[in-house]
Length: 157
Image (cartoon, rainbow, N blue to C red; front, top):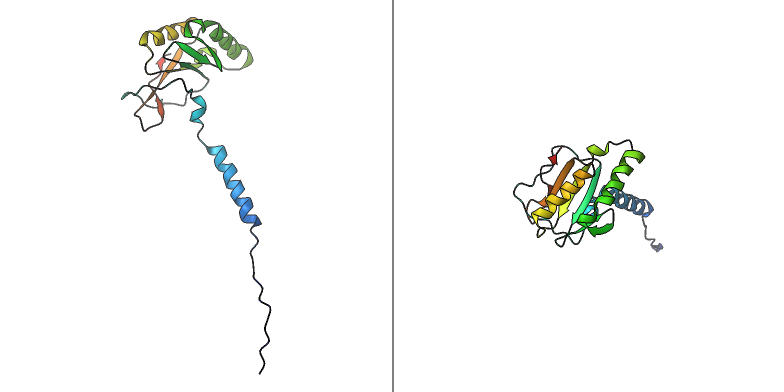
């Protein structure tokens, strides 16, 4: 008896749905990434604090000010000496008051001061913010070196 040889065919699955699913998962996780790094600035190394803890509620209407150890302040991508920040704070207060439905007095000023910045500079910065009309403040610190930055209990308001 003669056995006929069959042509062997390799069966392959269609990988198109798997590739589509992979791209959808990548897009999904990109949307869910925690963007805490968007709040950072390279000139600021946050101090460590045992008192650092997350705020009791989610802080909304944030204005972030980065304060370097040399007194350089960065707010809304504008770099000036912290003593000259008053004009920019007035503009921000006006922008919040006119262009949004938010109350500027409810806006929280988040101060990210360098760990070597003098405490007096931070106090003067808070005073400048108060003169511009802001009342709520939060200081950023690190709970410890291996953890993400946390807020110290908000000041004022």
